[in-house]
Image (cartoon, rainbow, N blue to C red; front, side):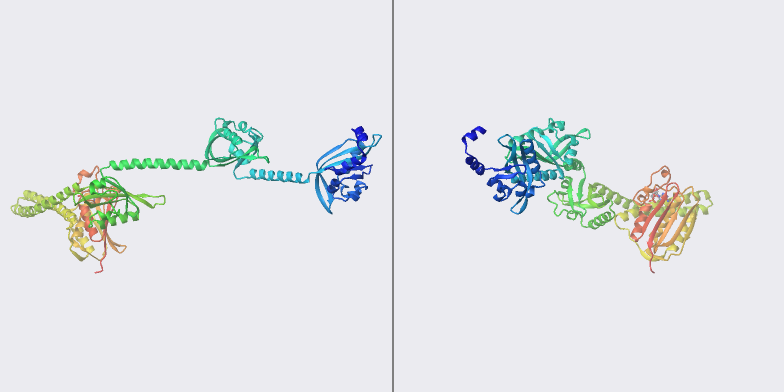
Length: 623
Ligand code: ADP
C-alpha cells in the first residue's frame, strides 16, 4: 500500500483526499501533538477556526487539558498501538460554549521514514445526537419499568417467544404465589400449573398475530400457599414492539376480581335459592285450603293464593285498589282497623273475625283472618303474612247454639222459679209438722235450685252478650258499700274466712247489680279453687286514680300462659284437679265483658299450686 501510494499518488492528491474526506481528520505530530493538519470537518467538530493548525493540541483545544484524550494520545504515540474510542464523552468549547459531545474515533500512530512513530492521526465521527437519543430511550424505558413495578395492578413483561419473565411487580409475584426467583425464567417453567390452561397458547398467539388480548373475569388456577386455587382476573396481553415494529415482548396487566366474581356467584346462588324457596312457598300456599296472603306494612295486598278467587271471586287483576275495604263488610271494618293498628304498633300477630263479600253468591260470609308481621333486622315491619279461614259454617252453628241456649235457658227460668217457691213452701210445711229430716231435704233441693238458677243465669247472660243485648243500668254508687254487702252475704255460706281490707274509695258510675255479679263471681271462684285453704283476702283501693278491687286466694293457681285465656268463653284450665271443680267456664267471660263495657280492666296474677289474685279496675266517678 505504502509503495503504491509513493509510486502512484502525488502528495497534493493525498492532501486533497485528506481535506475533502467526509470524515473528520487530523494529524497531530511530535510529542506535543502539534496540529499538523485538520480538515474542515474536524475543525467544525472541535468548534475551532483553522488558525489552530500549527498549534500544539493543548493550545488549540485548551479545554481538553484534564480530559483523558491526551493520555490516550501519548499511549498511542509511545506504544504504536492504535486506539478505538466508542461513544466517548468529550467536553469541547464550541462557539464560546462548553458542550458535552460524544465521539467515535480512531487514534493511529504515524511513522517516519525509519519506522518510528512521529505523530498520531485522528479520525473522528460525532455521535452526540445518537447517544443522547439512546440515553433518552433508556431513560424512558427505565421510567416505564418503574411505572410497571409500582403499578397498583399486577404487571409482568414476557420477552421473546419463550416468554421469559423479564419483569414482574410484587403484586404479580404475589398473584402467582411465587417469589422473585421466577424473574428470568420462561413463564411455562415458573408456573408449571399453567399446563392445560389456555394462557401460554394465548400469549404465543399475541406474539404471532400482534393483537392485544383482553379477558374479563377469566378463571385461572394457580398454586398459591402450596395448593391449587382458583382465582378470577381481568387481564390484557399487549404486544410491545421495537423501533422497527417487531414484537419483542408482551406486557401482561391483570386485576384480581376474585372477590367480586365470588360475591356475584353467591348473589346468583342466593337469588336462585330465593326463587326456589319462593316457588316452594307459593306451591305450599296454593295447596292450602285457606286464603293465604301477604300485604305491605300499609295494608295493601302484595300476594294472595287462588282461594281468594274461589271464596271471594276476586283475582289478582281485579282487586283494585288492593286493599281490604273493597270486600269487607263495612260494619266490621272499624274492628279490623283497630286490631290491625294495635298489632302494627306493637309488632305482634292479630286475629279477627269478620264478614267478607262473596261475589259469586252476592252474600257476606264469615272469615277468621290472622296476620303475622314479618320483621326486618331493625324490628321494622317488612310485610304482613296471613291467612283467612272460612268459619261461616262454624258461625252458623254458633248462632244456632246461642239461639238454642237463649230459648232453653229462658224456658227453664219460669219452671225453676216455681220450683224454688214450691221447695221453700214445702220446707216450711215440713218444719211446721215437725218432720225435720224431710225439711232438710227440701232445703237441699232449694239450694240446688239456686245453683241451677245461677247456671241458667250465666247461660242467658252469654247469649245476651253474644247478641249484643247485655244492657247496663248505669248509676253512681259507693263501691266499698257494694263490696261489704257481698262479702257479708258470701261469708254466710262459706267456711273460708273472707278478710275484707277494703278502703273507702268513693263512687263509680256503672251497673251496680252487674258489678256486684263480677265481685260475687271472683269471690266464688276464690273459694271454689282453694279447697285446702282457710281464707281469702279482699282489697279495695285507689290505684292510678282508678278504683282497684282484688281477691287473693291460696288455692290451686294456674300456669302463667293460661292467665289471659280464662277470660274467654267456655274456657276452663285443664289439669289433674280440674275434674273435681264443677263449672261451665262462663263466669270470668261474663265478668270480663261487664268490666270492659264499664270502661274498666280485668286481669289475674297466678302461680300454679300457690294461688291467684284476680283484679279489676274501674274509673272513679266524680259524683
Ligand atoms: P268456671 O269456674 O265455671 O269453670 P270461670 O269462667 O269462672 O268458669 O273460670 C274459668 C276457669 O278459670 C276455671 O275453669 C278455672 O280453671 C280458672 N279459674 C277461675 N278462678 C280461679 C281461681 N281463683 N284459681 C284457679 N283457677 C281459677
